[in-house]
Image 1 (cartoon, helix red, strand yellow):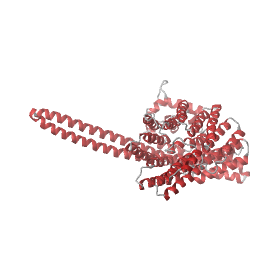
Image 2 (cartoon, one colour; image 1 turned 45 degrees about the vertical axis):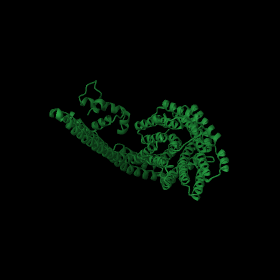
Image 3 (tube, helix red, strand yellow; image 1 turned 180 degrees about the vertical axis):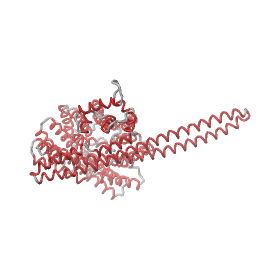
Image 4 (cartoon, one colour; image 1 turned 180 degrees about the horizontal axis):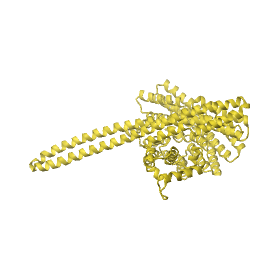
Length: 627
């Protein structure tokens, strides 16, 4: 089901990129207005509306219209038009997922706004740059940009876009998997937007983001509830494009619930809207998701037909990311139909494209689908090769994420530290001010007696000193927590990196043996035995255990030594078992890790409990968690 989410994600992420989403006027009506326009400014405004309309309908046409805006504006030295042209061009490139060109044009929009001393598109372009930074994994930079945009919104008293900015800021937390801060941000956005009667479709965007969060947390009931709320709003404002997206989102939830009839019905409702209004991009994605639902039902020919329909007339402006997803889904569907040549053609193309473009996540998915296809055809060696390659990429993605997490945590730590220092300085200034007030009070109280002055000033000064001391202690505690988190993640990354190096060496050796079998089939028996031995060796590697034990001891404060103080003769195998139990692994998971039967683990747990002197009523896992 993971692969479904990749097709879904490209569709759902659209409203995060489009900062300036608004209900659209039909293109033919705008064409008539363009003919009647009497000034270059009117022409630019109408062309801008046309470019917005074509953004997800025909992105290349939107770029052409933006270029026309730029040409007219350049000839007339029209600053707003130059800014608008680059901004609209950037949005269209964003729709095509050509992010380098999008970024360049957003920067140009900002440059022209500043050059002509105008705020036009300034906040919107910065917000969209923030979205791109988030997509590139630069979340801290993205959030800081959104914070700047939020300040601009408040300075201009633009509370509508302030609410939109809070929504986009929260989306960055969502992308990081920080669902608590994401939900907090979405709720804050709603609190602002609920007070503004105009442009209520913005509330719909927030509801849709909350639904995405619920979807990721497998809370499908709430996801459907929020999607229906979003849809109600889009229907009120006749926002047909986003209605089509929401129907596809609803279909995705039903697909996850395996309610195929409801999923298909939802996709078809979205498709009807797409066909009525000519939304090609949304139509393509809805057809793709419909095809997956049909494939999951076993309706393979119908699924294949919908996959092909999904790319009809969109090849020229569909993003490469979507084309890769389409290729590996079509390839796997052919594999299920036992169309081996067609399957490999599409799967190999998906792998080649994703590899050349450096799209690691899609390369991983494409390899997984090809591995499954090889397994269907009984080509176990090829299937294993792809599976091993996929796991290497998976580990690489994991390590990259860990590196970014450490970098972000370090930056957050430094930022919090500076903020705490500033807060402390402010507190000290406040204290000095209060002392000045006490001095003034002294003069008034002097005639009333020295004792009163000493008591009052002493209490005030003591109170503020205590507050400073308390703040300093809190700051030091927070610094210590951040430092511990950074050290913990650095240890985790070091452990994972070492494991990855060892695994890559093992995989390389395994690949060489597989290559020998392919080149010399007569060596199959000998090489097969060698592969089995190699796998057993890797599975029970003492080296891996030593690395794990060292890392585990660091994180869990010399866990093994604590066990030895309870029972000096505890064996290495028993320490290993206790460590796995401390990590809350199940009996089945431990058995698989140690390459033994689950019954053997149950017996070992019983013996360990006895050695540790625990009575019948004491739970072994709970006891180990207290160490």
